[in-house]
Image 1 (cartoon, rainbow, N blue to C red):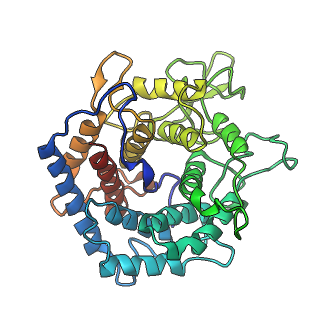
Image 2 (image 1 turned 90 degrees about the vertical axis):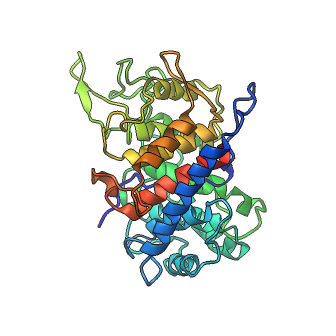
Length: 382
């Protein structure tokens, strides 16, 4: 059973959202904040009840789903369930999937599972996991692609990361999950003399990210769209887009930008320490302003909708956006918008589920973890 490249990971340090530097924080709406907290608690109570007796959620084949559930539970304000039997069993299961080479997976999707499991382990804030995390960090850094002549960046896939070494193709979502895990585990290799202190070639990663951005003049690949509607957004990998493509006047196929992966692109630039003033960051922000929507994952409709809301929440928080000004000039309180949308979509049992099954979003455990983590980030930013 294959999980698509759109499963996300938790946010640790970026949870406390900051307003734009020139604006004060808004006065907190305490009543609404309590509504958000209640939705979080109901969601985590659902996850607590849905755990398999062996400690995993949804499937034993992909520990990433369990790591997402653990991240959601531990992100709750007050951490009611931190010392619960469910959390303890969940971590025992995740650790049981650790390999001698540092990877944390069962049989496949090695980078994807390891990166998300790293975020789940980091969420525990337990020094006893540091040795496992260092080995996992070294494993993920070692997954970085260099398909042509070593060190030359002579293919557009170089610098990125895919599902595994033998997958042969880097993609934006696997690169995002890897960059996020490496970014939040940097403190573990502050002492360069410790074992497993391998790091990523961050400059090469930035080049790969750029190779997936619809930005003429910066990305010189043939598929780059000249349509203003695509400018600045992202595609899945250097020659394909989940949103498809259109044939342009010269007979070449131009790939279309879409919502979730464009937020992944913004986050990836942030984790790679590309400054907000950089034209590449400004371009993706312009695309996201032009395509702000709570009704769909732009370019994908209902496919990957909850993942889209989750990445929107993480990316705008990380970019320190308080109010988002759309291209029409409207200023939107995106935190309240996203929180209200999720509260209204929550089911009576506390879960969330997408009617569209693309990318595993009919799995209530997976989607509930996305929704809960999004609300936790919003709660801390209110």
